[in-house]
Image (tube, rainbow, N blue to C red; front, side, top):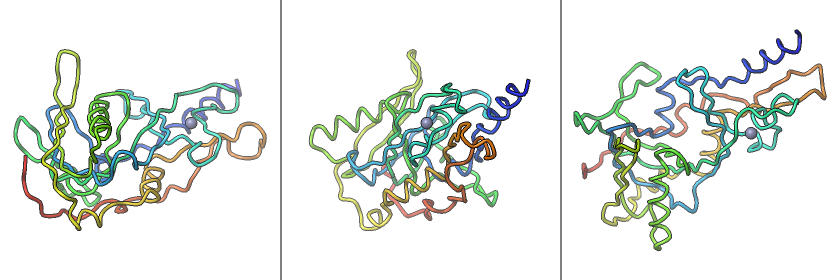
Length: 247
Ligand SMILES: [Zn+2]
């Protein structure tokens, strides 16, 4: 059936580009089980950049979905609208992208610094400017709840360093988020604060939306990347800075 083949092609094309682990780790801070990080949020929670993202976990990495909703760039979204036949593939959820300076990320069992492999194949410590993606679901909900409570009590989360540590309990994963004593943001860290435009550019290039053009123009491609996806590499990454080990 022609229709079935077209549907298969659409589904194949809708697969997100799988980025290398190194690229992901250069843009985002990932906290896994039994890992602890010391960070400084560079903005308060009320000024973070929010995105609608289609995010569906699957154990097979090729079937994972992590794509910015095309409505973010004012285009019809494949994942919201399907291929024009009205089906919805995966709901979009809101993510808040908080820029943070990562002093260190360690494995609490071994005490070792977590490394990632960069584009030149070199192992580098996870350190420097990253985005911490906060959502109201999953283990990171704990971070968002703690930060929200801090802000509601009149605080500014960028006024101090924070430790985040992930544990596994009988109820599943959870993250303990603790503030350090208040300390003004240093001029070096202030200079690293990325603009809202830069954060949007990095996230859009990392997880480019797919727009659906429907059936209105049979001569056009069924799906198009809604933005040009050039390399975001290096936009956010910074050289490692000297820092005091306070963990
Ligand atoms: Zn969408």
